[in-house]
Length: 129
Image 1 (cartoon, rainbow, N blue to C red):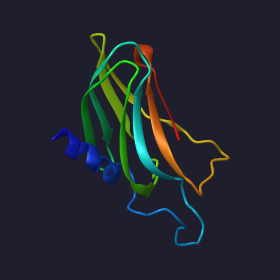
Image 2: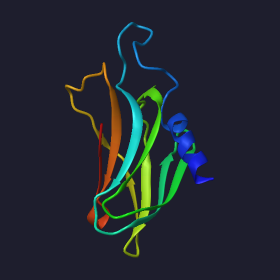
Image 3: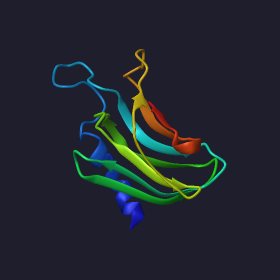
Image 4: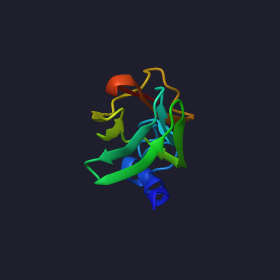
């Protein structure tokens, strides 16, 4: 059942547009084809849940091992940059953080990119394209 939720994530997070130009003939946002949640700590993270309030999209993952990641690949889609939250448990603590992706100003929009969410110690969270 969990894999079905992971497969639906791109629909909840991203538009249905394919890579290329928008209606104006210019690229809108960057296009992505993968979401990675990376556990950068020395301890497993449990009950990982990603929520997108505007779409009601929810993705759950039971465990991401210490120093490991979970990658979800999907057909290329325009990154809509919707508000999203990641919650998880680690070391007996529960965390919930908004995901703010660092998007470099000089990002090459002609290529496909990945969104990487980094889970760090003491509830630290960062993300980048």
